[in-house]
Length: 213
Image (cartoon, rainbow, N blue to C red; front, side):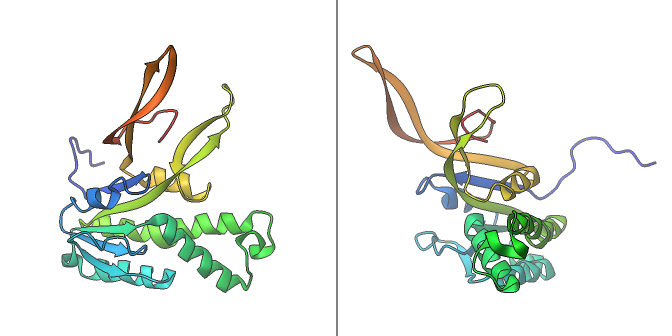
């Protein structure tokens, strides 16, 4: 039995999500030597290395190229995973010869299950191979406000990854860093009534709270 102690140097798996225009891509650009897989064509105003991607197979091909030559970049950024999920959905519909993920493989939720399984196998596990080569991976996602059903408290709204419900937990479990970005808000008293105001200050949250992951 070989036992080791202390921290083990490793590349980082990071997921950054938040509202539109908050600066997710700008934050990802601060990682070492990033290469953006610009699925949304949203990095035009950033001075970064980028490559375009129009379908799921092309995304897989890019990951394999970086794995074959890790010197291409020190960080691979997927911008965004919600758009990547759309590419995978289109791939599944083409393979299943159907026009809706709800009809895939006969329906009854099989489409969403297949989507989550393929997202993990064909994307996250392939990205793990880059991690083993010392390449950081950053996933960018939009945020969506969704109703959360709690077994102990009344339902409440919270910010979640803007991907399907079966894909979201897989991404969160995969991530070493899960960062939520939003504008700072505060409740101020106006004539005895609480009013929410935004300061315009951008905040990055790294701790879990009921309102976000």
